[in-house]
Length: 298
Image (cartoon, rainbow, N blue to C red; front, side, top):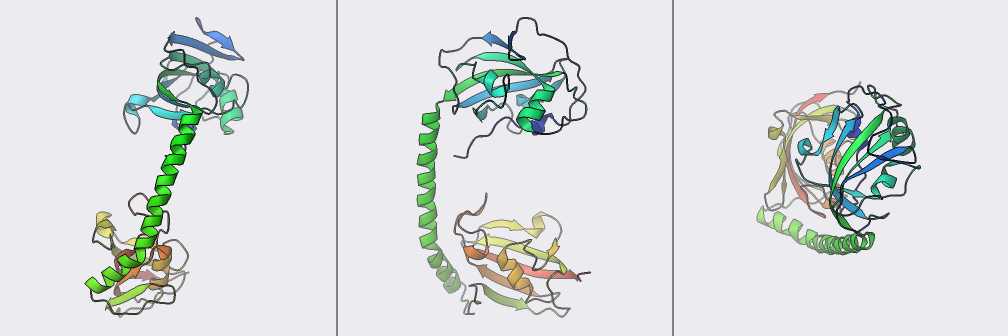
């Protein structure tokens, strides 16, 4: 479980103009901000370190909608926010620690204070520094700090166990792929297997050249995770400049324009112990690659 993050300031950056509307009728003033309970929930208070699952909208004090949770990246789903220490009196966290599980609340915070003291960023153009941002929040549920810490430890332990299992299996995956595909070439000093499929007749790639490469990447079981054909164009980058995984930097400096190779890269030359969103930890990878064009370094 990843650490949950505070409400993103980025959602506010392309917003329309607003003006300070003065004090808010029906709201209680709290350290220069304004707070109102629209509907009371349970008695469970929200404290520092708790994780709050909530749905919210942000408006200016002139009712211009800045952020609507229904139109977010995952429409309608609650946002998880871990409550931190207030950065100043009357900030967002102080307002949120006045909420309870199940509450529906509204609070208004000065724009200049929010951006200068909490976000430490310039006030976006179109926002009145003396105006207010008004948050309307519905609290779905609350996880205590202790519960979240326990869950994070449990998930981290499971993840570590999975990574260790993958680490121990990597050598077997490499040997199986080599055997199944009758690959007999010796690995390079780094452990990279390079099978030349077609020798290019063009100039050789040198460090710093901008190259255009077509490719297909798979796991050793044949599962495709990426291919240049999905992007409708070759991939362009500077060879040998650490802009790609180490396996690519290494093999490209052995290739000519028009060369085609198949490589088997151990995880240390690919995405390592962490993997990424589509590649498991400690995964050896297979790439079919062709140098389509070389644009010599200037």
